[in-house]
Image (tube, rainbow, N blue to C red; front, top):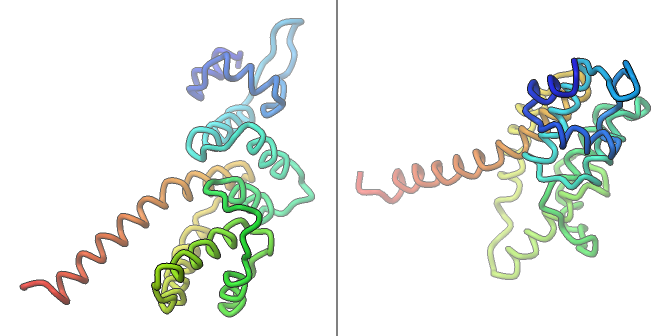
Length: 200
């Protein structure tokens, strides 16, 4: 297909496709003349992934390049590629945050989490904020068990046939399902409050 058809198929404007080509995010097409190239399904899949990373994930072009580099390196496992995608997603905690309390928690849970995982710093910052306002941390194990059940459901749906589709699924699923988790938690709190404290 020509670049115009690639644009129509993916919904990505031609100018943006050309930008992704210049930035090396999208591999060049098969050159058919000095000014023409054709593109295949691989380009469609790659453009959809880039679009998900940029528009849904909110990643910068530099972060997208890092994720795609990890994805393209066949020496990396799918686990590493998914980790690169998750690591690039906001929010980002400061590098200076002491992640020791979070590390101790995940170790106590028996979870296999790398020391460089950005979510460790996010968790440590949240734990520190809870302690600063006098909120107990006694719910963390319950929250962790619920989160692990959600993670099992998430990872079970990651397609294994295509690395690009797996990363797209993980990014889009993470970004779009996080608001669902928040909403369900609040609705569940309303239900439990009504059962415990309501008038019937």
